[in-house]
Image 1 (spheres, rainbow, N blue to C red):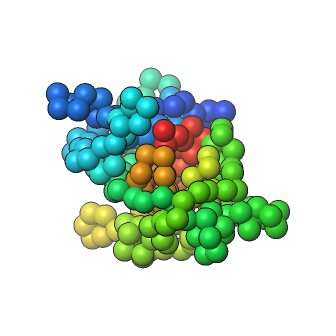
Image 2 (tube, one colour):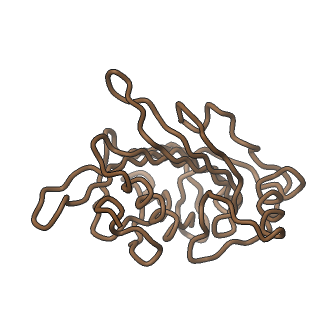
Length: 225
């Protein structure tokens, strides 16, 4: 296991709640995700913002908003913290999630029925569920919605009962526009009436295993609500 991959795995992640506090709406939750053990998650280039929210069972959930965070970890014993990955989140309102043919729920259920396992997201602690309810959904994301400059692979998934899609590829950053590996995840939630766009990008100068470690941890402790 390389130094960049240390902390990867379902048992080496700790949960981290992303939330926004305001004098207007109090505390508004974004989502709960996993961070590799020993890593730190901090605000990025701009603080998280919430434009709209929905109150369910006394808890406020963002239905429109965005945020950027840095993931950092020490380079060794007593070493200084170094950036490992960047996390981007966009939340948009969404209707109920469809369960008919061609929807992510149906595609993921079909794959599970065949006993296959995709190279995409692995289910969190709640386990995959091959069922979703509702009448309509946002549909498969368009290529531009992933936020990736290059898409190498895509697929559908069910993550803790939430149907969605994943993509693996790369983004172009800086000058002269170097490619950086990236992963993206789009999930539907009828309970909180929203759609989540999540993107992880490898930080410049990071270790080869950093992105995979961050991805595995994010999924291991992921919760929409």
